[in-house]
Every structure is written in C-alpha cells, then in structure tokens.
Length: 320
Image: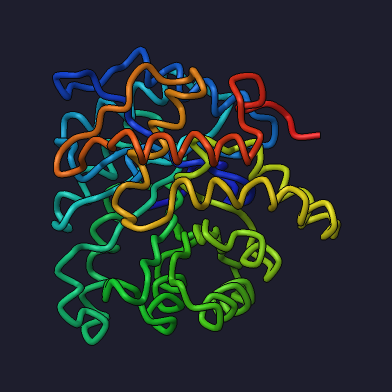
C-alpha cells in the first residue's frame, strides 16, 4: 500500500506504560495523564503505545485498540503515535495494523511472532510473509523490532536488508540485539541503503555508547520515566558534546540500576513504582504474571532515584 504518514524515525521515542486499577482494568485517566507528562518533554519526537512497557502481552485485542484510541485522543497532532503490533498470528497482525491505522496511529512497531524462536532464522520466507500481511493491510511506516540475539527471535542482518528492500514502509528498526559488533553493522548497513533505514536503540543499559555509534534515535521503556534525560543525552551526543553527554549519563546510570538489574522482568513494575514515588502515577499495579515488589526493592528504587536527582519537581523537566 502507499505510505501516507509523515512520520520521521528519528529522535527520542519513549514507550509508555499502561496504568491499571486494582481490579486490573485499564485506568484511562491515569493513562492520559501519563501520556501528557511524556509529551510535555521538549524534544520527544514520538510516543509508543502497546509495547513491552505497556504490558501489551496482557492486553486483549479490544484493549489494544482502546489503548491506541485513547493515546491518539490524548496526543492529537502534538506528538506522533507509534502503536505496537504484538501477536503470534500474521492474520491477527494484519488486523492490529489496520486497527492502528484506523485509530490514527502514525507508525507501527512490529514484534516478531514467538514461533520464530524455533530456528525461524532458517526460514526467512516466514518472516517475509509475516510482513507481507501487515504491509498489505495498512500504509503506515513500520519500525521492525530487532530482538536480542539470545532470544532466538532476532532477524539475521541479511533478512533485515531483504525486508527493507521488499517493503519500503519499513523506516527503522528498534535494535535490542545486544551485540555491539552487529549493532554497528545495523547502523552502517541499514543507513547505507538507497532508502536509508534508521536504527533506534533500545540498549537502555548502555545508551550513551549505543548512541555514540551513530543511532538515529532511542525507543525505550525507560523513557516513560526519564524522557527528559534521554532527550538531553541524545542532543549532547548529536552535537558532539561528549563531556556534557557524560554528565547526563551519570544521572541516567542510577536509573539503569533501578530499572534493569536482575530480574529483568520486573523492569516495568519498577518504572511504575518510580512514577508513584515521583507523584506521576496513582498506583503501581501490574498484570500477572508480573508481581508486586517488596518493601526492600521499593526502597532500593527510591535510593536510585535520589542518586539520579529525580524528584517530583525534576521529573520530565528540562535538563540544564
């Protein structure tokens, strides 16, 4: 289909959280407030809903549609909206893609189907077919989610390049490959295509180094809490001011510990708790199988926020 969106895959693109009520229903008022907080950060170039940070794996089809609709209603035309396509069915992926377009999304973030973990890299035609269904269903620009190599869901570089040639709607990858050597090849070889494809890093545990390699942007769940710090770091790197970038990175580092220390599955639970501490979210409810944090873990997050100099006053505020 002919691409119609003006979305540009560059800059800082936080992946938002999905707040829940105690009965595990979506708290739409809190969600709107959360989106408004992120969108208030000058320099944010897009916001992603229905991603890992939004606990998309726990959302029904109708809930995913509602999240997209509420996000678009809230953001309007102020900040572009990226909507995740998370499903194990190519046919369902096509439906989700069309729904996202109908609800006003500006771009898609396409996750790999879990079945590809069964040596799917040896069947690139299956990967190509998955994207065929999506591109025939809608005309939105696409960000391909490149999973970690250890997940067995990562696409070989040769397959990524083929996808980009076949489907011009692909404008970027969200790169979580985890290997610096391949990460740099992604940046160089996707950027050298006749229609260059951006690399948006989600290597949040080594963000400064990743950006310094030449990534065109950031797409990260941590941006739901530290969008202002990510914008400041991205701006410093792009302007070549590594001294300033290092100072900002020193503030980001405690949040890396707060969110991404083992076990990694708690990362979004930790982010919700951080926002509660910062007075930006009512409650830190997550859906199972995610679990509540104990008092010791919550105290640890609080200490890391202090080390990062994150307070109710500095949260989402411009970084000097």
